Image (cartoon, rainbow, N blue to C red; front, side, top):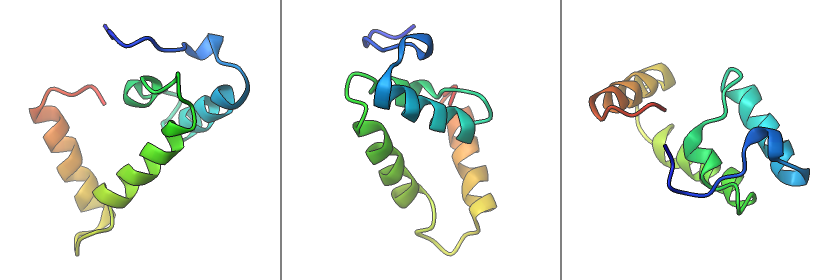
Length: 82
């Protein structure tokens, strides 16, 4: 349960609705809670997503699948749902 006020998918309008739809399309029909927590400031969502891609992936000699496996393993260890 989140303690951060969020705008739910079915309540989203305008630019936030567009951003949610893009996220859902990229995440196999799922809206990541880590992105939804920024719903009160919609323009932060694509900026944080871009920062995450830049910092997390592509900055090493590992392949993208290897980086994804490491990220998944760390999430499991941290008991992170996303």
